[in-house]
Image (cartoon, rainbow over all chains, first blue to last red; front, side):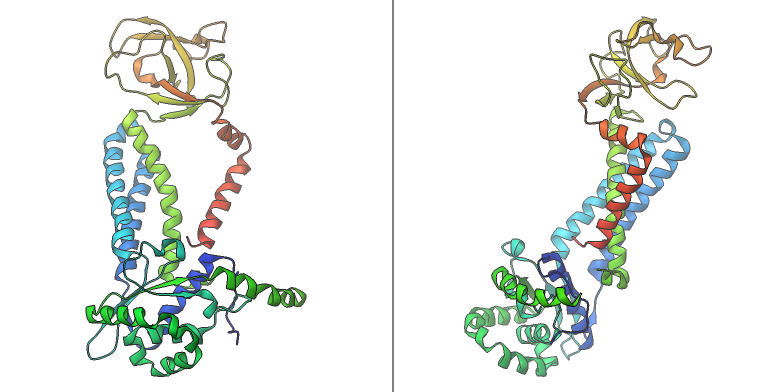
Length: 226
Length: 172
């Protein structure tokens, strides 16, 4: 069942989230979604512009001393503060943890944006649609398993489901036990999300108990192998 | 662990995060410089010449604007001597004249004689522009870290290296 990818530490929440986040563009781009990098590009532009300002300031300060350049330095400090402030606002109010933005290859050119968060931040997410434990798509040793992850995405985001009906069918058989737990509200929320046709957030969360109980059994075997 | 470096945008973002940590620290320092009008608004005491007021390792906060009054006798100032890199923190004990050309004489509280020995060859007094700030606040002992770092330069390299590695290898 384990894939050939490197394994991560199942206790590291950031690793779990990052690996899952990285799998989203892989999957959606393979379904011919066209990914938009607008959010990242603006963030990089703001950040590097600020860095260049600071670098220039450092250079003239180093070469010419403080006294003769202090008005330029004051201007650079102000500009840096502005750029960095803009970057912070961009990250908090525009990106809001978005990990994927893309357009579906269907007739409607449906745009989706996927936002993920780990439990501590979940309360702040307004459009949370789905909360799933990481244990659904990581095995005990920390290998990412693509199939259930993709099935989860395909079954919960309608436009993805339409492009990949095979995964939806797989999800129906695999996670039928989850269905009763999630269906009513989530389906309603999804309907709303789709009629709005742009923002779909997916909140990933970890079921700590399941993770820790699942691990030790496999860990012993791993250690002996190494 | 290194897989994130395969995506150019992600690599650029991580490099940016590291760069922004450095540049933000630098720009905060420069901001403080601009506000206090001092090229070095925070200094660390390196000698015991101002004991018992300041000990080696104390962190001093400087202010270099004469908003209300000129720099006067009794103030503790930090000054640079021509051709010497190390700023000295001592008290003004004599002042002749007023304005930017007033002649100032300094002395360490713990020293037996005044600073004429420390000044550059042929220099008998300081003027206002030799001074990079008056001490307006201090934090005891905190600066000892920088003394350690400058006396054992490899610590600096090690610290920077570790910081860089952590930022590059760990997202969030």
